[in-house]
Length: 183
Image (cartoon, rainbow, N blue to C red; front, side, top):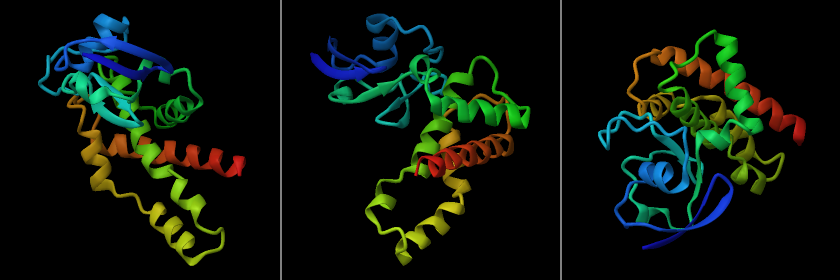
């Protein structure tokens, strides 16, 4: 099967078995060295990638789901400005995931931040509209249950959820400050 997708900013045309998992495509066909896939599809969470800005377990994503997808691995993500927000949050809290899950937990946090700061809807609303003010107020209240569920994609127990939530909140603060400066 031929699949057209973008991986780490490069448009690729891959000829692979339609059921081949993304983790193997990245390791065998693309030569990515940052993907860790010890569990072979049992969802440990160490093989997280961003697919269209959402955290996904690459070991369970079959090739046929990759058509026209934008895939970002930690290898390219760590070169972005967004990575610095999370890195600073780790430093601020003094907590960092272990080397086995650092990449995947960082990508999960980025996925959460993307969702929380997605301003497409906000830009469509007028700056002074009541709906915009309501949107900003609801944005201030983090849905901790949803965030915990997202963070649970990685099963490593090196950090507890309260530490991870604190990192998300601090990284979100950094991200919002950047967004305000740009506007």
